[in-house]
Length: 317
Image 1 (cartoon, rainbow, N blue to C red):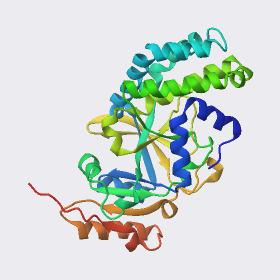
Image 2: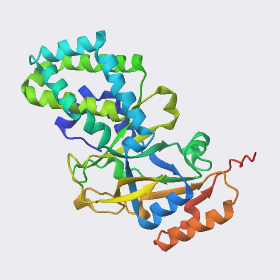
Image 3: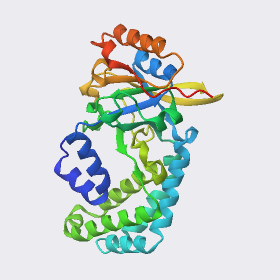
Image 4: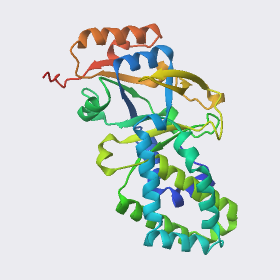
């Protein structure tokens, strides 16, 4: 993975923790994992599509509110004042313009963001999965290769971002790091012009809002894939109204395919699936055979070796 010079500079200044995590995933060839129910996993593989749901109907909605509230708390504090002073020293009223932009987009961020969530997979979990994730999300784990996640392209209009696990103190420290970078790079930012600086701050705040969670969830090691059709549409997304949990809702379905011309790299099922881990379940053999059959039906080589049964015992009662 290689960012162009301008993008890398922006991320180093305004998203230092994020760029470090993205580069680590690429350098270490980390894989990702999607914990879900067996029913959903079968549908993802057989239909070759991943659903993105509106954040307002998911647990992630409260997490977006958490991020927005954290922004308000920290940016109204002493470190926020230092940040504002550093920015306005480059161009007066830049913060005012960024605040006005944020006010106009806050509602849209909350209600027009569609997301799917995955976690960074630890090789030590290849044979068992992660117990806390089994308990929270389901009995099946789809372990996938990282190629689609680290491909640098905006053709798809679907983006991935690692979650930051920050308390108010953590975001304050993180903002201090950003402010220091702004002060060091003042001349560079001055050369970009005020509107670019406003856009950079807006993008930074957006990512804080949609990808910041309480530190208590840190073991999840989550990344978020997000799609914002009010900003840009994707050639690989299909919209459909469905009923889930008795709630009629619009979902967007991402076609899982290898279509570099649309920004999809190595996202077809045979290339994407590294392994499927069957979690603690009452019928492991039957479930194993079912997933092997579905993979074989899609032409996946070595399907029997790609499906493993977790060695964590099922706890009954």
